[in-house]
Image (cartoon, rainbow, N blue to C red; front, side):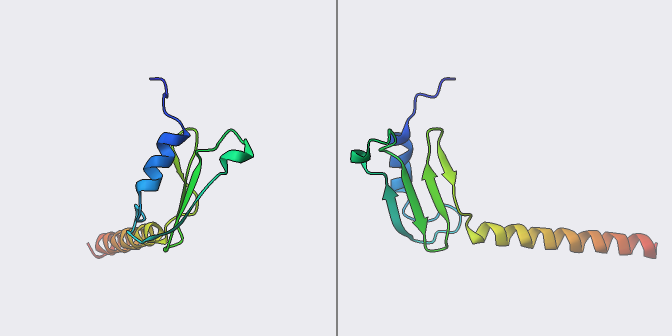
Length: 96
């Protein structure tokens, strides 16, 4: 399927995202490239959120710049849980 979308489509979607899509923190700033700069990417946008996450529009879609700490915290909690379950299961195997 050909990609018929462009920077303007992705920038518009990112502009509509006023809260971090991971944790809901408020957006604190957006940057757009200056159309007068003739960079060929005048519709590029970067959005930054209070949690520290950033997202940017690219030619292929919206990319994560700096990750949201909430996502990392969820991943850390899941790894901790998995380690605890593995240890519990190992202990049960030793006790049997």
